[in-house]
Amino acid sequence: MTQVAAEPEGVRAEVEALRRKLLDLSLKNRMLNYRPSKRLGITIVGEDSFQVHRILVEESKRMSFKGKADPPVKKLKTGELPSFDDEVAIEELKAAAEDELNAFLENSAMPIDQMDTKLDTDEFESILQAKLRHIQREAHLAYEELGINTLFLAMGTLEWCENEQRSFRAPLIYIPVSLERLANGCMRLAHDGSDVGENLPLRAK
Image 1: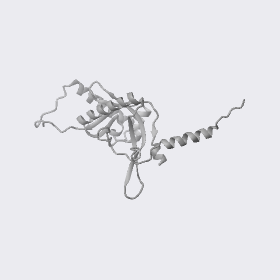
Image 2: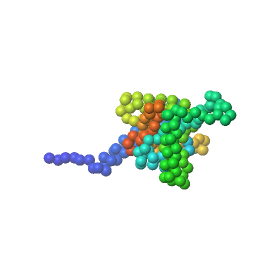
Image 3: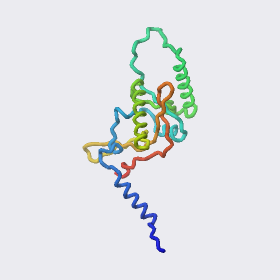
Image 4: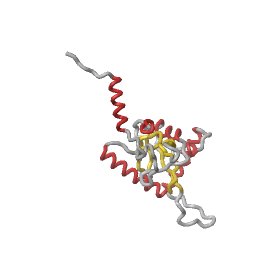
């Protein structure tokens, strides 16, 4: 009996050829021409990508989000102090203080806001939490319909040009993540355990 077996190298070449056919290298692909989504995206500012990767992926810690303070509804009278008799608020302040202390003890040379587990954003706090809840719902629906996680934290950006007329931005690394809702309604970010991915369309381009 004679059997015909494909050579491993030949199979690998065919798989690579099929993968290249599936890659969208047009500028409609947001992996090559990234534009922040006002509805389904949160822009993180002032963080260090290496530290975020260490905390999320290497140490498997959860990270929370920090927005800009909402505009004050009413101003405190001169000499009047804010009230801190809310137990939830006190616990949040205590956790924040411990987080900052741990970050300082781990590496005092790094800015604390780049070593802690809070991700700074350019959103107002009230808008931030509402957007995060919306993103979580959309990601959950996509998972139920497609069976795959469509929620990623994109880190690092390459600015590139096809000509001198216009430049484009492309994320470099994608961390698959999930959003978890706490009892107080706030959201936390966690690595879902899947492999961190690179930008394959960008590599092919």
